[in-house]
Length: 262
Image 1: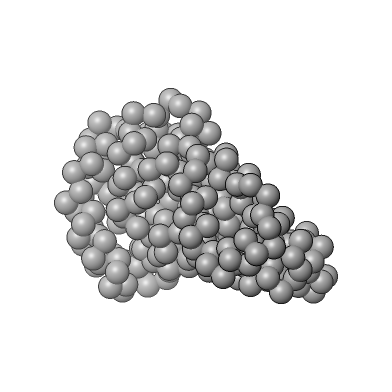
Image 2: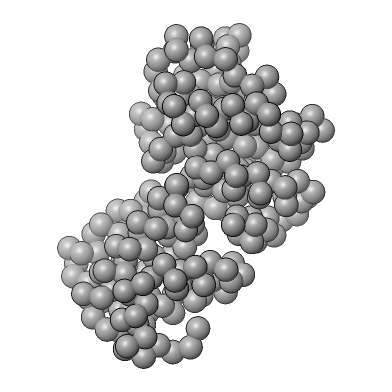
């Protein structure tokens, strides 16, 4: 992305979705660098345009159901806004506080532990899973969208085959406290049906669940590859690319996930 003129910055602030789409189509490292340039150029025009851009990018990048949803770019935006000189001290407070949420279970970092109980009463830890990949499926039996996604999960051959050949473990986590409802709900047989019995996900906010169902994809070392992913279609697309990359380093997996989300 070339150095932006004032008029170009104004145009990109007015229609940020077009510029964002261009950036997201770039390779991962380049995209983050171009996002930094875009934010720098807009900040130089003054607080009004910069604040408008930050607000738009926050909505598009942080909302799990949007096509533009991207946790790494969202982190870049919040980091930039938290130190932007065109904002007042008070205006920088919100992005600073948002960074705590953004950095929690961020792509490339080790996911927070989850202790879960299964229907037979036995108790387990997320960290005990040893397959190359772990897919966490946060769900609520009283959620209509969860029911629809669960129907699709019940017939998804890719995930079933990866579970069958011990490449993947899919663990459903119910994070709320209606245990009887959780126990009574049918569940796909290849997915571990777990309940967050110590209520840390919801009570302590160890995971930021903006909606449900929600997916997190982890590697063997429980480092996050996908965070806050609401689209099963995107999960399947990424899994199709990653299924043979169990021994690759985390950066290669993040690059592959980036390139295959859309």
